[in-house]
Amino acid sequence: MLVRVKAAGICHSAAHYRSGVTKTGPLPVTCGHEVAGVVEEVGSEVSAFKPGDRVAVHYLVSCGDCHHCRCGQEQFCTTGQMIGKHRDGGWADCICMPARSLFLLPQEVPLEQGAVMMCSSSTSLHALKKARLAGGETVAVFGIGGLGASAVQLARAMGAREVFAVDVNPVKLELAASFGAHPVRAGEGDPVAEIRRRTDGRGVDVAVEVVGLPATMRQAVQSLAVRGRAAIAGLSNRTFEIASYAELLGTEAEVIGVADHLAQEMPLLMDFARRGQLDLSRVITRRVPLDAAVIDGVLDELDRYGDHVRTVITP
Image (tube, rainbow, N blue to C red; front, side, top):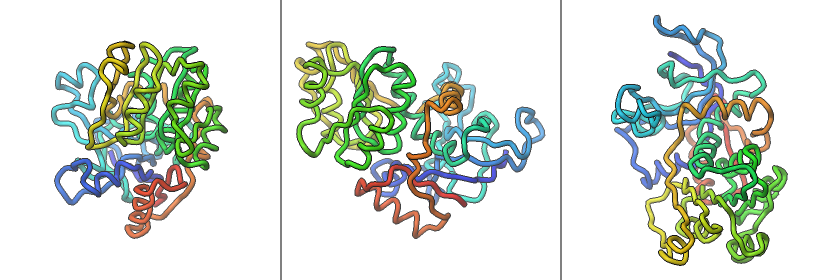
């Protein structure tokens, strides 16, 4: 299927691809894995879509037949490809995708928000589901960028009693607070100590780390309550330390790796957005044209952890 791209997010992952932190497929490759647009052409065997449909693009292209695909874990497909990494992505006028990678976008959700949902929000939802967040539990989100801003909202939508947002940037903490989170300014003290102070020494049931720094990964683990779960989603090629007894064995804590997200999670994500429980209108803080020099400047700023939360390309 051919999709005319109407919006494509600029994710920090693309900066990692550019710097070599994460390896990409054969070069050159067109980046862009947060994509939404309008169906332009459909194949002869496609019946679920028609030209003019508004769609969001699930960024994994999988075979549908291997063991992982049959188990509903297509992110581990033996021949799978991620758009913008292993095959051409959505920083372009059009993108060609199989029908099973497309999802109809509810009319209530703007295309720009639909694009950002396809990584920022979907990965955050997958992290919270992997961490088995239950209603009434407490959550700490380390890093309030595109993923973290979604994680705060999704945690509340899934019934979290309290959500703590940890970042060094006061602008991003103000955004998290507007979504109902308790802001924790990491640059002004020890965020783990502050979370424990605010939870009467208990810690949180679930921590979601979306920065990819050894310090924040360790802080996520250290912030856990007894039998807490830390979901690590931030990309990094660096190691981090855990005090095996005090921080893991003695509390039966869990450290959970988070890889991408699943197509089966998309309907729930779309429903959260349709009902307004996931609102990315304030998360998208900038729109830029499809221009290489401008996009490179955005990637430079992402490496500096600037004030912008999510930038969207509008071709």
